[in-house]
Length: 251
Image (cartoon, rainbow, N blue to C red):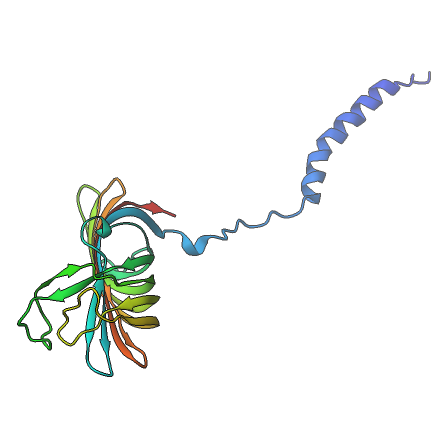
């Protein structure tokens, strides 16, 4: 007796087999997965610290022609307050020691409008002098930046914070323009002739940082540094001393 055909049963069996085979076929045909890549690997671990602080910044100008000089700075009080954004590389430690290597970067626009006036009777050639700062109608504005590699000593504290001392030597760049009163005794006064200055610089100079990094990402930092340079008419020296408090974001 011939066996009756069961087309419905055969169709069901075929559908089940096709469904079972489909995943393996799809897996065979799927393109190989690309390995994960991180475009930003080169800035991982960098620290960006916006903050506020106090800063004294002075620009010393000496004339080569007649040895007259002058010193301009930001004014005392509100002029010392400033906002800052400091950038710091990851700390590369030397083995298991507390010594290591870091890179610091910073840039700022500034305006200097108070001149230093020596007290009478002082030696004009002395490296140190006493006096006061006054607005005598002169002003210099501009910008400066630095990118400084530094050796550091870092102590990680029990609470998660750390203390860090760094000393480095690197590139300072900037430009300043404006006017200043130059005198042989460094006693400028309103009404005396002004000298125009317009200078660019790119010089290597020192930077010293003292940092206390709290465990909650707040940071207190003191910085001291500045370059010397010259052009055809003048010799210059820029000196910065600042104390800032900021919050650190780690990339």
